[in-house]
Length: 260
Ligand SMILES: [Zn+2]
Image (cartoon, rainbow, N blue to C red; front, side, top):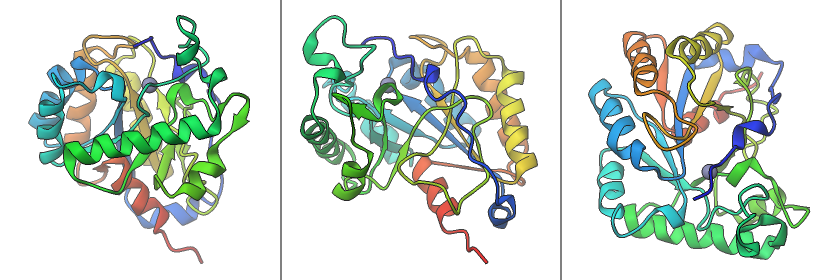
């Protein structure tokens, strides 16, 4: 799969105001991992297991093969969320090699068909029917047409994740679009201190924060294994003050905040 540079897009996405409405739950951290990478199976998940923390894995179908499906099935059985990142991960940036992979050549019909097909593959792996979604390369359009509302109307996914920078803290559950949930697209070689600083920002806001990881200790857009471990240690040490949830569980909690 092409190296994905999701985090370059929507870098300045911030969800603002109504901070009081989000204070009815503990600060929530959602750890999400994209593209079904081997380093996630080899390094991120063992670290999560040992810290007794959970997360969400946005699988792309072309990286989810007969060699890795048994491992992903075990991941699901342990309580992690498997989520939808399309069958073939089309992107404008990632489609230079073959026009068929370039999202500029897609139609809304073709992307919707891929999302539906990926839901079926995920169902074959874990037997679940409720899905969340991450836009490949954080692109909300294919062939120049925005498909967010078509996706919303389809009912194929409950929540969808977009990109954002290290300021992408969710503090407004009232005006939050469930199909445009911001996240911090973590760049290569981000340090443990930087990862923890994002959590502290979420703690101060009383809101929620979503990490978007790719490789952990390998692959690409790689977060060093040590930095990832340091983040998990911090979350483990502060588990009374912070809820670490899957993307779906976390967004359910954010969405269910009562507004006065
Ligand atoms: Zn991706």
